[in-house]
Image (cartoon, rainbow, N blue to C red; front, side, top):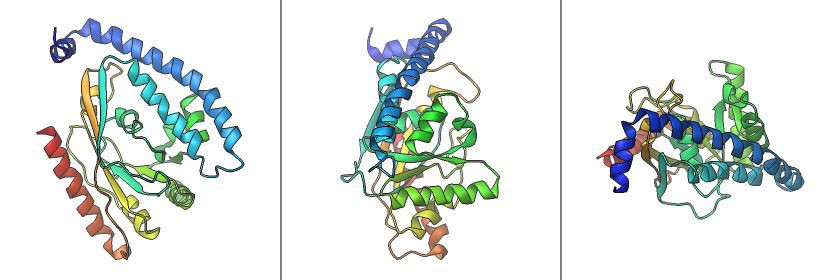
Length: 257
């Protein structure tokens, strides 16, 4: 049976999807348990000279690559304009289809620090890995936390590490692209670093909100051309925000077509 046909058939086979989903979650748990001491060793070894925690973070993201090797339900790929200097900081933004976006985007070959809600940091082992990697926690709706998170993002940029934000604020509930918030664009202008747009497609089907069962999918993250913020001021935030949203929306439509 051809691979495409096998994947299509599997989508409608509840028993097979349940078994393979259990397998994929089990493997993820095992890999996370293995990765905690590995990342811990790298973190300890690089603390004296790696102030931005670049290398612990880089190793942490590889967890997602290894997991995908063992997950027959998902086929991930990257495409687009890959950056040449991994220590050239960007404010990276992407549309947000599902939790799986983080696993897919982590396949990109450079490290970036993630702005993530506090509840993710509370997951045992995963939260430890994120803390060692230097990711940035955020309590939604808490102004003090938002200010602290933006300071954290600024700190990572100053240490020559990109930061990754979802400007929609939360994942889509129906697959459509939501409105973008100002934070990522204000951050980029304040620190005069380019915006690096990403487009993810196919992850919405991979894991539906509120469900633990995985669906077979071919998902892709595409890296678009950086958008310069040179010379822009806070007054330019709305225009920059809508420009980047339009770029992502157009590319997403092309990928889905």
